[in-house]
Amino acid sequence: MKKLLYLCAALAMAFTAATVRAADVTGTWSAEMKTPDGNSFPLTFNFKQDGDKLTGTVQGPQGDPIEISNGKVDGDKLTFDVAFNGMTIHHDCTVDGDQIKMTTKSDSGDFPAMQLTLKRAPAAAPAAPATPASPPAPPTGMTAQPQGAL
Image 1 (cartoon, helix red, strand yellow):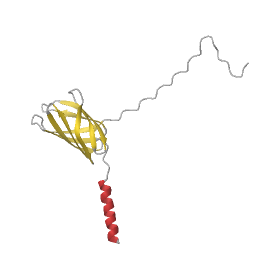
Image 2 (tube, one colour; image 1 turned 135 degrees about the vertical axis):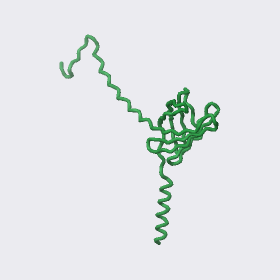
Image 3 (cartoon, helix red, strand yellow; image 1 turned 120 degrees about the horizontal axis):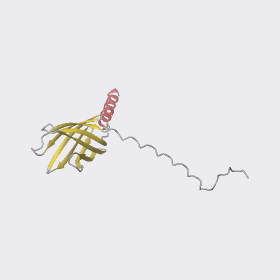
Image 4 (cartoon, one colour; image 1 turned 180 degrees about the vertical axis):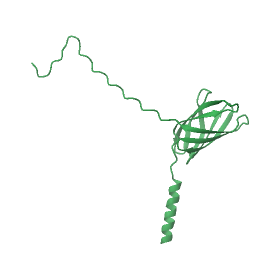
């Protein structure tokens, strides 16, 4: 009987560990990319996570956002590809709280492998409530009379 109890406890712990929810990476993340010549430029990643599926865009100095493809989330790991200028860059990432450690690898020798650290952008502050409008002024020439006064 004790063996059965130990077996059930071990299975319960194993299944609990296997179902640990991954952190949701939905939101805006930013990084500074350093180029081989010593310059740098900002990158902004906008992720949308739906279960183990990851979609979104990457925005850099090139102009329009670029869609990510093949996005997957597995625990604290995520992977995705970005294709532009005839090449595909694969991204392997590890999430650690409000940071993502990212390693990139291109299918082209023209783009060297790089490592980046993305930081979660702070959530936008809620909009201030609208100021109520003042009550309209009474029409000209009319005066207000207290009710009940005759």
